[in-house]
Length: 143
Image 1 (cartoon, one colour):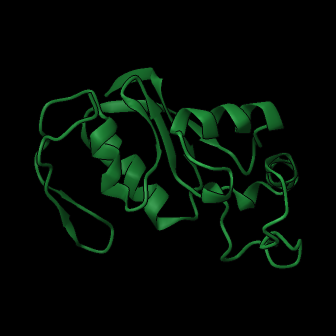
Image 2 (cartoon, rainbow, N blue to C red; image 1 turned 60 degrees about the horizontal axis):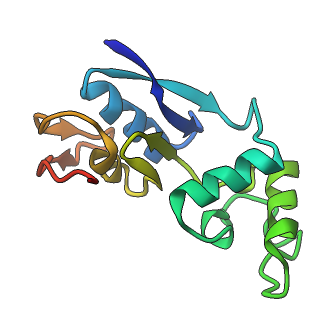
């Protein structure tokens, strides 16, 4: 496996989608930099930079299921990005996962095969997810 510190996955090993995404990266022969963000939470500036790199809204990276989202009142549309980033920094489980960053871009990889667009490799052989679903790589990559 080729270590590639220029590819980072923000990973939660308890999440099947995150495990499948990491396995797909490794299937490409790449060993990414793995950040278990629940053990090593991102601070507010790092979260802001990650959201900016993805070109999405802060709200779009919030996870509701299995988090304190409702208890914290995060559905309130009047909350600012700063307030949402503060909540994610204080409660890292609120960050949806997995997020992958490569030279080709950054994105939330749900479903896990979305990571294929970010991998700097040729078309990969078929890959079977944990549940047996087969992922076929079409070779489409971000430019």
